[in-house]
Length: 196
Image 1 (spheres, rainbow, N blue to C red):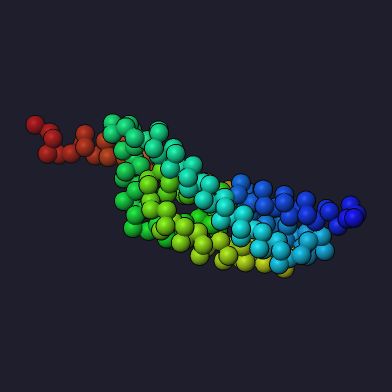
Image 2 (image 1 turned 120 degrees about the vertical axis):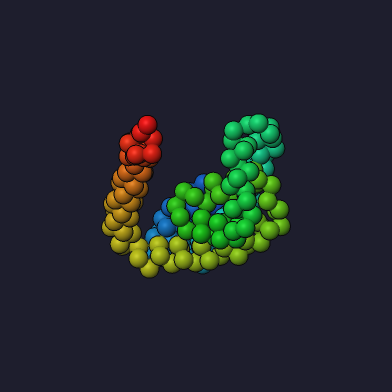
């Protein structure tokens, strides 16, 4: 009969499998951290994360297909028109969009939902998922395992970098808005060819 100590890792592995489709990077980082400290076997954590990531990606793809079929079918729908424009880009760069989204926290699920909503061929998307999930798990899991003590300081730095980037983008868009709204209007109104 199993004692409670040997049952806990099984529950932990099950929890990793269930949480990875919804927050894969955070889950894998934390599980790798725990593996470094002897709570889990690192190889099992990586294997479960790969399987859970593939399963979750398939779920997000078919959720997108459901959304696309039932909510974006109207030809005059504003969202449908915008999706058709973005679909052209995604058709051309689907591999890189899915692959890179794995490594940008919070972007993986929306990209897969979008690929399902724009009716990308499942075989094409599944191929990218099979290729990218082991690479993602290896990189993120290794980062969590080998840098387990410095994860929290890196996370703080990444948060600051993201805030600086957000402020920079906001300044660019604000500057663009001011130029389009006021300076172009001023130049149009004060054009010498308009004076009669």
